[in-house]
View (cartoon, rainbow, N blue to C red):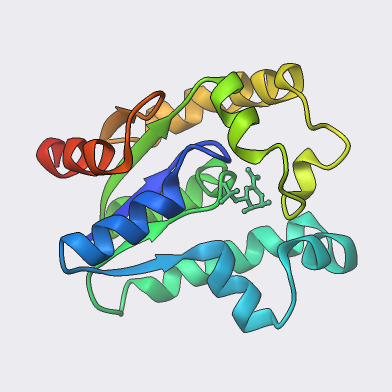
Length: 165
Ligand code: S3P
């Protein structure tokens, strides 16, 4: 069984996946980093040179490949659950965990990052809040469990995830 961590950018998916990987003896995959390694360029370059749609196809293709690999915890991109076929692939392979955080918390966590093309030029709480509200119904529909991450430390977040699973 794979564990898929979904949620908005800056909700702590990558940190939690790494932590669960090392403390609970599981392999972990960070989809964005894996795609960057395989493509030999950054997410920003993929968006700029090939377009978002191309990136979305890479995400779906990678999710499909995870099915035949070992059980692991997978940190998804924030947009991964927006495609229904991705949700189906995840459901077939394991459990889906939604990590949440307020727009203010997300802003604090991502404001200095420049590898999130959707936030380039939109780096403010209002934009984050709007996009988060648009996406939340799909995140919630996809999730088997939901874990809040505001003001929580990483070990409590991961204990919460593993206990609820
Ligand atoms: C995206 C989130 C990013 C990355 C890409 C698009 C999104 O991943 O996949 O920039 O659509 O929300 P993180 O959630 O890991 O930042």
